[in-house]
Image (cartoon, rainbow, N blue to C red):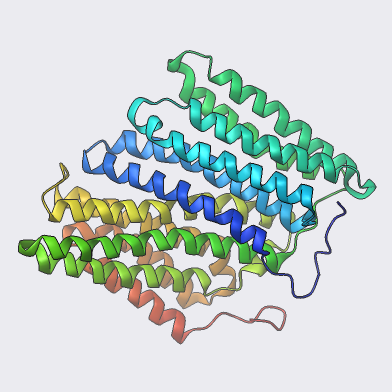
Length: 378
């Protein structure tokens, strides 16, 4: 398992990587559904906290595989088996998400997460056989292994310290790549076009959840004749905003955002907020539908924030890590300002209309003012 050429021409996502992403569709869907139910029951703090905890496990496992694959993917039989093992861990994790929301029981989620990470350890040990990356790979394998032991130990600690333990271990997980890459001269080869394509594909998965929520509004409209106009309206507006989120995300050339190690870390880590916001947006749409159909304990005012806050985080996150360095002054004013103004949507009596207008305005600005050419390439 030798390092891949970071300048390899024509490098694209493999069918195995696309297959791998399918299980994350399941995990994200379950996490978003549970967040939706928590929001509709007016358990906002508990729902958001549980979502952040669960989504970190989903995102971190996906991201670690993605960066490893861009550097070392071989597609032999053992690599495929270990990847499928990771997929099994994702499904176990997804099965335990409901327990996290219902009883704050993290055991099944931790088991699924550790299964994914143990498979990742095996991949790094394979990579350590190459002299070019031996020290780097062993550092990764050792660091991941130590943290997994601590995750297992966390299951046996009193419930009162679970959240504190989670925060400590999240920091430990995030620190492993930093320590490994900074330890010596060896670094993982990053293929900029391949890695950013993978991030784009995962973003599409998350935005797909919002399109599902839009479709659910139409489905409910068929059965809720009295609420037909507002349900159709929220469906149309959700489609427009989701399309705008897609447009904004893919406007800049993302591969320019990971030209150095520091930029790669920022791109990879800040995407947690981008991905989590996209996943939470679909839950917010479902919560708004519940309000319209009188199946929610939330007020219309509060329900509006369940949609606008994720949108603002998504836009600000993309602007920070990929868009601003390829934009002129006008775009760098309009995009973050529009994201902030989205938060004022709840003061308008018509739900979601201000957000839609602002997002369309951002897209129009991006159309009129294309990305700045960097190094002769757009």
